[in-house]
Image (cartoon, rainbow, N blue to C red; front, side, top):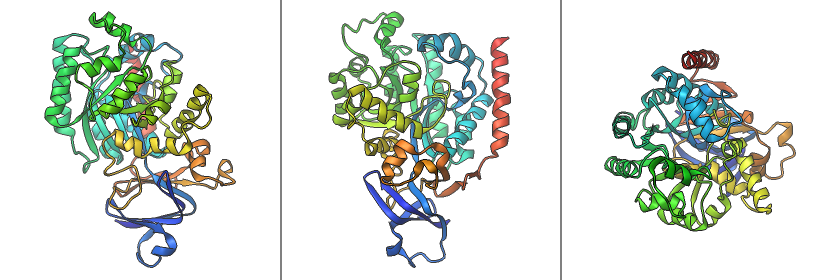
Length: 440
């Protein structure tokens, strides 16, 4: 398929904006980018989408979520994380069936596509069913089976075997849109020996690790209570680093409670951080020191976490919240500029998912993962600074067209790859059935 994506503005990358420009797509790749006046006539006969009054930008990246938890949206709110998990979420998850994961992930893919998210990192269960939903929706995803061992060797081995199966069978599905990682849940749910075993196995398959790290203030205490390990004043990052877990293949979700020393460890090891500002605020987990991470050269991407703790999958909301909470927290309005935040939502997220060679910017040779926004909205007028508008004023429903791998998945607000009403109805019924099973 050959076509031209046209906009009043084209965000090649957050620090390079072209006015009245076009992106030329052939098959699944970008083959040219430039001012419309300079490329006029060079690609005659190509279909044109977008146009005046539109902004064209790289697809947004959601670096950490549990996609099928859309089925638990609104089920358990206003609770402490430990109680939220043990009293509400884990008991329901014990009743999940493979088909639930497929339907919940399909709903998440629909929501993300309509929000301009073209790639996401997912950690949950029955991930072959999640992969099926990803393939059908046309989106891009990095999936991992969530492993919770809690010192139970038999359960840990089952989880590890399942994680290996997912890596073997799902890597490269959907014409390469599905890639895989290993997903040990956290250091307080996985013993040190188990984490090391997972690391060795991930290295064998040459894939990364997706893990929750330093999410809450009491995580050190949780490790002590669960495994009898006294960290003796060290933080969680120091602990897992000493286990040999941290390197450039690790995607660490949250990373809220870290010291300056640990931030330097993250930078030195090349660990990627998934920043979940809305979920962290809603669960009162704290505010991650993102400005300090960025100053130290840590790669940071934005994430929503699951819909049960957010409660939506909207990177536009994450961008604005991320920008303003760090300004307020540091009493410095210059930190986390709009450009830095847009970088976290695009190329930063692509780096965090190890996909930056293919996505994250609109440059020649990269995959055609492209989003078009309609600027003809009252909240986007007048227009003085397009990056400012994208971070501080735009909403997810300003997205009108979404392209992944050179395929138009949504055009002028109409999703072409999924029956939206059918997915919504199926998800409602599936969620009701799940809760009914859990309560009987």
